[in-house]
Length: 584
Image (cartoon, rainbow, N blue to C red; front, side):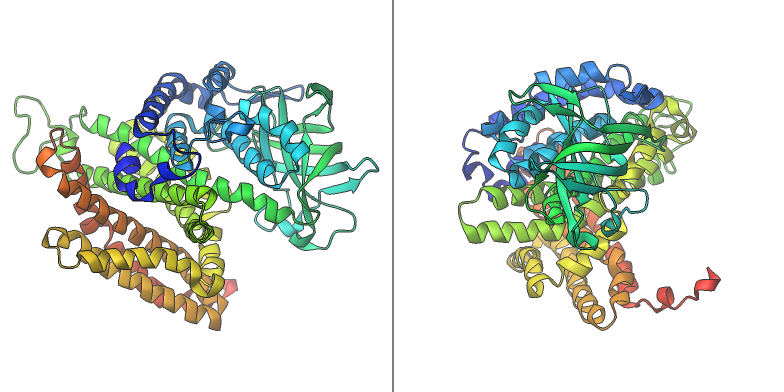
């Protein structure tokens, strides 16, 4: 994390942006150290017990697993809820790069716990951007402090991805408020015992609203009404009808919420709810990418530890421990293959998600309007890429972790099977990964005549051109260059054929997104290799040696997937769309 923050992303000069002047490397390193301590000593010990106990609904109140409430009180006492919130609302104002790294730690140690403050921060960002001054004054400080928490209430039984089917309704009142009625399902942190109030952000439509998504508005609906002095008032008409019994994240309360004449307040403009909600959804997609990364890292750490202590069989060539009855499984090529596959993609994904976070900081804090726009274009382009890739990778890494443990991974004792179950939801919520792929090819590629693409293609092309003659980097820049050409050709193919037939773009979408992610990580691995090469003479601990060798593995064993992906893309969609419906 320090390598990514201080070396790989040094050119982003985040510390020079307004509001970041006090966040020196020493300060950021101290925050990382303390975050690691808190997550490993307070949250990780609750991960398995929270999964086994789960949440329970008692007389309309959801009880979180034993230890969660105390851990949450410790969490807010340490100020973690305000880490990335503005100082004017009581936060610490750290940049999004630090928030992404902290979120990874949270998710590695306890993904279910991470859901609660994660939803609250999303609610904070939506109200901060779209709420009026009175709403900001009332609702933001308690959210930042952690006394109140937040949710996003979109999904209903008849609509998930297609939010135009929402039926929840909001009736205007003479005092400017609204009466909200309807039901929402799959609401993370919808009801729990961690905070004294819960701020629900609800998508609903007014009686005169246009049909579809154009008629949706966002309403703030608190669990308890708030008095003029900011204190808690009467219970609002929001109740938890049930909690879901799920495959994973069992300590995260996933609720069905019933809104029965609940009092709510319009956030932003009427019938502009989707625009406002995307503030929360896009931030959530970046966070969910890190959810996948966090699970992958935890699975990798567990698998490495096991491979260094478990003895099975003998090395294929020469025994590494002839005095023992068997060698460590770390000596076996296939175990090493799985570990390096996990490691190379985790470190590449961390670099990529942190790069996106760094550009997000520029989109918010850079004083130059053009620089802000360029950074926002980049974040818009890469958001679906990292959401889908990192969560796919997280699920794959968790399964590899189980495979390395063998039968001991399949049972609960070592915790590896929980990673598989917890990781699976990340590919689904906040827009399933197929939807992310369609967003990439259907919206982001053609946007503004390809303007978004330039923010990625130009720096990669410039890097390849400037290092093309460097023999020390040839083993990294060469494979990157070939894969980059495939991505350029695939982009042109998708653009041309997608205009002719939208199903062609749809059939290519998931393969195209993964190709994009691999090329993006190859670019970052080439840059990381360049940094590692420069530190070879002073690499006492072997950190840069390992970085360099991991880069080699990625280029030789992971990046070649780009050839197969390119072949699938240009094969077209006939074999998919031409298959007869009755034959399924």
